[in-house]
Length: 26
Image (cartoon, rainbow, N blue to C red; front, side):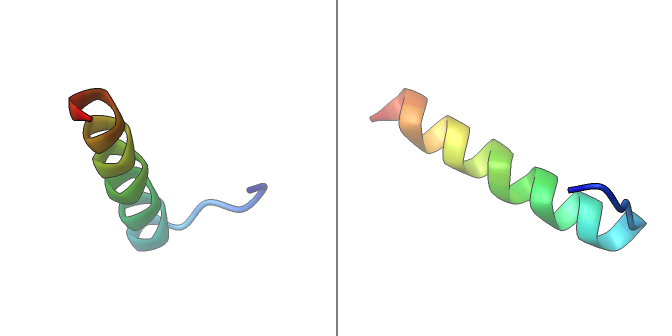
């Protein structure tokens, strides 16, 4: 990702964080 938008950035960050947490939990 080269562009950064406040809303999109947060959405992507939330998605990434959720995926990481699920992976660590599993």
